[in-house]
Amino acid sequence: MKKQSTHKKQINYRKLCLSVLFTLVLLGLDAVFFNTLSLASGIQKLGFPLLRLMGFITIGLLAGQIIEAMGWTREVAVLARPVFRFSKMGNHCSAAFTMAFISGAAANAMLLEFYEEQKISKLQLFLANYINQFPAFFLHLPTTMFIVLPLTGIAGGFYFLITFLATLFRTLCFLTFGHIYLNEPSERTDSKATPGAGDSQKPATAMEITQVTGSKAKMNNRKKPDKIALLKTIQSRLPVRIANIFTWVLPIYTLVFILNANGVFNYLNQALSAYVTISLMPVESLSIIILSFAAEFTSGFAAAGALMNAGVLSVKQTVIALLLGNVLAFPIRALRHQLPRYMGIFSPKMGLQLLLSGQFFRVVSIIIIGTLYYLAV
Image (cartoon, rainbow, N blue to C red; front, side):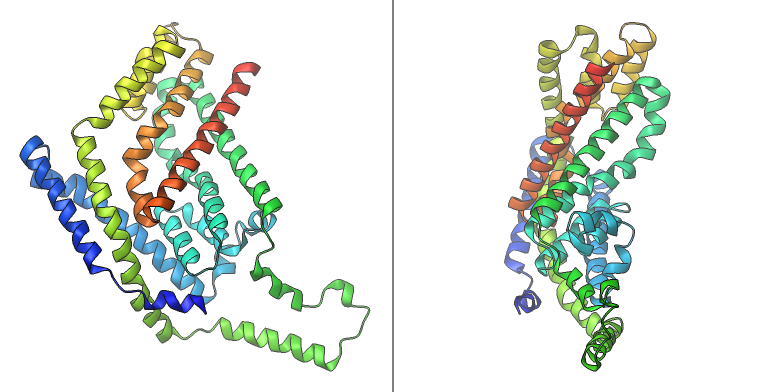
């Protein structure tokens, strides 16, 4: 079996050492030429977030291995099973979807685990990652909603409604795509062994009864795995997976952090927002777009609410300005926050493909729903 080849993987200490060395070089260059990172701030702003990210990745990998080995895939996937049954994506993707309501990094780590164990295909991995943006929307909703709504009132409500409808729209599109193009998951074929209602007219033979009881016995045996074997499997696989992911996460996360600390992303935000505002938006919206780029939307929403309450902008203009800020902010925001974890959890090539394609679909869906709002209101 091909799955056994994954057990023989070893930690690539050469790549790990090169990763640590490259990270130290980056930190040294920052200390010599920029001096933006002290020891205390490095531990607080770089070390702790990095440990937190690796902790969630470890939880995801561990959960994926335990769920698979203990035969809990169906139980964990029960909440979203009808939806993923329609999309033909199977219980493994459904289990990762459930985990995404707790942690996106852990859900991605589970998808990687299932993919490397050949439980899901590459297409299933991509679709599941796109669909996991739906629980991610609710993950960040409580924090942003109680900040945004007091600042912008009804305009903020429309903004959240449009972004939610955009998320729902693309999720339904991905589910429909899976329903059309994916084959029936192999994990559902075992249900065919159980006699259906249409077979009640024919009396079961002794051989059929033996086959059914035998299949039930196998299912019962699967529910009682060897815990010692499970621990050995985790002990052999988990450190290798964590080390391989950490090899990519450490330098990429550090590089993005140093660039952000030296104002590179803020400079790109200011330059891009000024160009787009002058070209596409009224002058009154200039402060909204610039602040929303530079300050992660909090200051942007505050400026939007002030201009709207002063009568400078209408509710409709305010909503469109905030949506435009959302759409135009995705390249910089994705590089700053999501690139290290995507390229670290998955391979750099696959992580970049997932990040860019997922953000592309997000932007397209917001443009579609935002256009409908603009034409309807």
